[in-house]
Image (cartoon, rainbow, N blue to C red; front, side, top):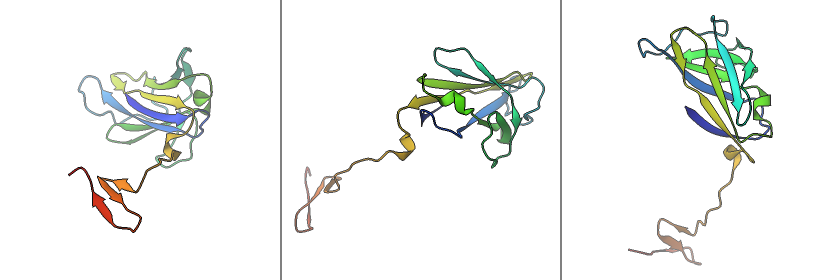
Length: 144
């Protein structure tokens, strides 16, 4: 299962999942949005599964809820509906299934208060790797 985190109410989220031919274990490469039996669902914790209509997509296309495309070597792009990421759940799992003799990995998205991709980290640049910068710009190694 792929794990990632996004801020609540984020829009335009795309996840990647892998497909495998169950009988051989080889990557499944023939999937398309209109493949017979294809089912896409999302499940928010403490809620029932919600079906998503698969729609055509390209590797670089604009996000479209239910977008589904094979990227190569059994890797698929799935465009997550914005409704899956709204307030009211701690996480959401994206499930793809229904194609005969094919299994897909799942993608779990943790829903957090702020986007971890835009977080800032404070660092004391005066003390890195055991060096401490003194007021005159020189450094001294400590702990050796």
